[in-house]
Image 1: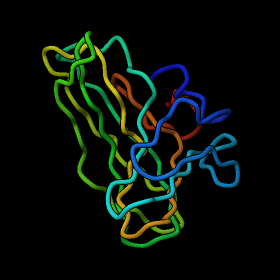
Image 2 (image 1 turned 90 degrees about the vertical axis):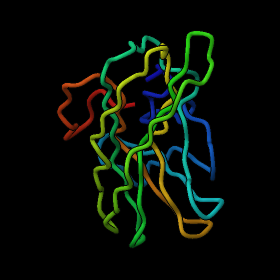
Image 3 (image 1 turned 180 degrees about the horizontal axis):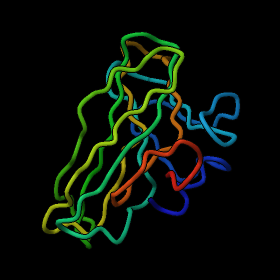
Length: 162
């Protein structure tokens, strides 16, 4: 991930909303001192994406994505995904994981999922904080986010998250 996106512990400046509102939240976190909280503005996909592109993507290489997600709601799901782009920032294709059902009041691991960078990809934009809401104003918290090259041991604490 980009350097800015790695700092959820200190700032949410590395993220941009795709849907909903988001903020750094120090009242609920899995590890460290903060998480990324997203509140849905629509029914359906509620997500943030990494600011800027993740450079250094190697075509044909397998990348791992995962996130821990918390909600107080039952029956909600979450995903991870990315857009692959060329060196000139042209869209190549997208990867979206299958939906993982979240357990209410528990940090649920979404992933790890793997995606292979397509032939012309040299950059990516990560949609690691991604929940599916059933109404507006639903809250989801994301922590220990990861986009990188395997082998990856899922973080049991703060490590190299995004």
